[in-house]
Structure formats: structure tokens, C-alpha cells
Length: 412
Ligand code: T4K
Image (cartoon, rainbow, N blue to C red; front, side, top):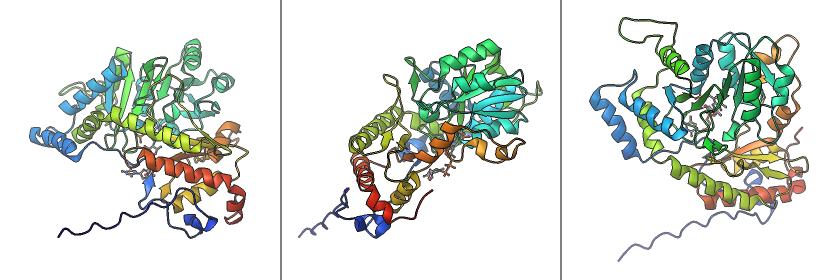
């Protein structure tokens, strides 16, 4: 006789019957496993293994190997840019790009970004000068650039935060007028477009991250893209100690090479990247449907009509919200949802920048976003149905925020 199958466990209802059903107040968590922001989405193991095995078979493991070259070719085609150079991470990618451009003095950049953007500048002995960001796209505000630019400014370094294009046309115009390069930190921007084209060919040079937490991941990795052939040549040299070939050294360089295992993972994931973007779009739609009526909350939207990876699901708590962002994060962590608070503090408030003479500048948008944004899980770890349940629970918490807040520690 066949064994009776065990009863399927009933999922915890998205909308609690009473406050005590919230996991933070003693109820069962909404999910039986932890969901993360930045959980890697991977191609099937067999496909990853096969690519890695091919590198092992060749015994060609790094130094511009065939898998790195294939990744550069395929990503270059995808990004519609003539030169695409793989590096071992985006932070070194930014450093190599700044160095290959011969940037000196000050670099104007947004304070609202990952600290790695600022540290890349500082690491080279350049001076980061922080500006505020735009409310609409969270990218560097061109008006701030106009305000802070001086003869000492050697470059503008803007960020396509969450994959949404920053104000590229305005920033390109300012950079052109001042005769300085525009470097675009496109760490989040794989799969995202602007003005009908993929990001990757704007400004003087763009730098993507292929870190494990990114939409397209190569464990650790990055891509530098440019239309400038001479610059691409210098970047390739600097990526490899300034060595153009055997027994030659042409300039100072570093070791920013991507290895073959990273390229193997990147290529395997690239085969599935478009499907992943569709999945993330479905997650975004499911979150959006569940949160449509949530009071005091805005779900960040892509630029209308442009390609978007939906890798980052970004929520903004509005002044009318009944709960503080950090209260929501605590509630979610109890439900096994590891929501994140990227990026707090703003770079200007982090060391060593906050302790510079004169103190940090006042940057109201950066400071507000650092207090009000949170990011939710995306990728293959979560289904659209689960995203919808999570959105409904969040919406419920906000609808009952006054009552929930009385049971939580006070927030500033
Ligand atoms: N510019 C911008 C705008 C950036 O956002 C970044 C990187 C860069 C430049 C520099 O790019 P890279 O040099 O890294 O290529 C993470 C990433 O480490 C960092 O790459 C990323 N931005 C930043 C936004 O997020 P953390 O400190 O939040 O990482 P961590 O270790 O807390 O991981 C995040 C979550 O991901 C964890 O809660 C769990 C999950 N996770 C992570 C890893 C590494 C996994 O499930 N598995 C994993 O293997 O910085």
C-alpha cells in the first residue's frame, strides 16, 4: 500500500488576525527560510560545473583566458559598446579607469552610493567631493555638480543607482564644457537601459560590477566599457601590471585581471540572465500589486519604456507612514526577510570623510534617503506568489502602524 503523503504545511497567512501573529510579537515567521537582498541567482549547477571543468581541462586559469575573452565579447555585444574589459571587481575597475584617464585633484561624486565608489577615489590619493542626489532617480544631481565644480575638479563620477540611469545627458554636457571625463559607476546597471539603448556606452567610461550579489554575477568581477579605443588599450595594460607582452613593461599597472572560474560562472549566468530579469519583473509587479494601497510607502519604478533588471526592489517610506523604516526592517527580519538599508550612512558621513576639516557637507536628499529607503529580496530565491504575500504583510503593518508601533521600541 502506498504511504499516505504528509499534509502540506499551511502557509502562514499574509495578513495576521491580530498583532500577536506578527513574528516579532510571538507569531510564526511568514517564511520558513531566510530571504536575502543580494542572494546570488545561479545557473543550474551542471552548467556552471561544465564551464569550470573546461578551464581545468585547458589548465588555463587566468591572464586573459578564453572564457574571459568570451565574456568580454558577449557582454560588449549586449551592451552595444566597442570595448568591454573584464576586471576582478568594480572597485578596482573604477580605480583603473580613473588612473588610465590620468585624473588628478578632486572627483565630484554622489554621497548616496556604496562606500566602494568613494573609496576607489580616495585609494588613488584623489579627493572625493560629495554632492547630493536627485529625488527622482537617486543619481548625482547636475545642479549640485554645477555648484561644487572648481578648477581643481579632475572628473565627475556619477552612479546609475539601482540600475536607473542618472542624469547622463546633463552630466555629459557639464563634463564636456569643463573638459573633464565623466565616469559612470554602472555597478547596478547590467540589463538596464536609457534612451532606448543599454547603459554601458555613456560618459567617457562605465564600470559594471559582477559581484555575487549583483543581477549578473561572476562570484567577483567587473566590466569596464568605453567607446574610446586608446583608453581601452591603456585600461587593458593597467589591468595587467602595464605589461603588453613578454619581457615588456610600458607603464605602471596593477593586477585587476579576472580569472577563468569567475568568467565561467559569469558566462553560465549570462545564458539565463534575460530569464532572471523577467522573473524579477514579475516579483516587482507582485510587490507592486500587494503594496498598491499601503499607506505612506512608494515602490521605486523604472524609467518608463526603458529596459530594467528589477534586481533592486526599493521602497521609500513617506512622511505619512505610520512606522519608521527601521521598525519595518525589525518586523521583516523576524519574518525571515533580511531587508537592507542601502546606503546608510551616506559616504560623506562615513570615515574617513566625515572627519575631514570643515566636517561633512549637509546633503538633505542623501540624508533623507538614508533614513527612509529599504530593499526587499529579489531573484530566484523567491517566487512572485511569495513576494505578493510579503507585500501584503508589509501593507498590513502600515495599515495598522499606530497599533504596531505601541508594541515596538521607539525609533528616532
Ligand atoms: N559601486 C556601487 C554602486 C556598488 O553597489 C558596488 C558594490 C560597487 C561600486 C563595488 O562593486 P564590487 O567591487 O563589489 O564589484 C554588497 C556587495 O559586497 C557589494 O558588491 C555591493 N556593491 C553592495 C551594494 O552590496 P554588503 O556589505 O551589503 O554585502 P553582504 O556581505 O552583506 O551581502 C549582502 C547579502 O547578500 C547578505 O545579506 C547575504 C547575501 N549573500 C551575499 C553573498 C556575498 C549571499 O546570500 N551569498 C553570498 O555569496 O555589500
